Amino acid sequence: MQVSVEFIYNSSFTLYDDQLYVRWLTACATNFDATSIDLAIAFMDDEALHALNVKHLNHDTLTDIITFDDSVGGDVVANIAISVERVRANANGFSQPFDNELIRVISHGLLHCLGFNDKTEIEQQKMKAAEDVCIKLFHVEQESSRYVS
Image 1 (tube, rainbow, N blue to C red):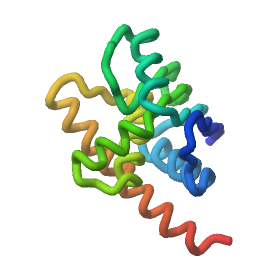
Image 2: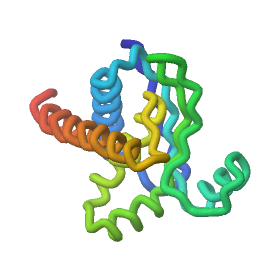
Image 3: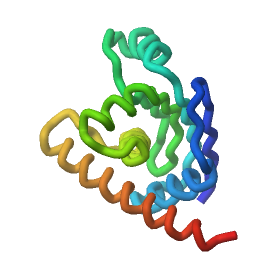
Image 4: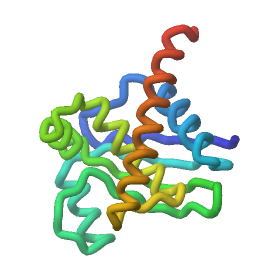
């Protein structure tokens, strides 16, 4: 599988291991039958993501993620923007560790590119189940990376 993942840090936040996340995203994409992935994932604050939400989607609300999806078939191509502040707030609101909420949000963006939607209750259930698969894959990848040098 051809893989290109770029992380863009527009805030003080950084991932602790970019390559772990690349391997994990590759595993998730493979699990859901993607043939390639080309992602740019930007981490930013609420203000910056809110500006994107207003400009591109005409939504005057805070959100945790916006996915600009240009995928075709199994070729995932997207720009994903994530508010680290919103992820932290949601993690607190859902009594979840920040890391789990972050991988759920990243999974959510990827899954939209793979054809998952979340407008109806049934779609939301399917999205949640797929997110859970990705979260489990992250923990498997994280565990296996402890034994790779």
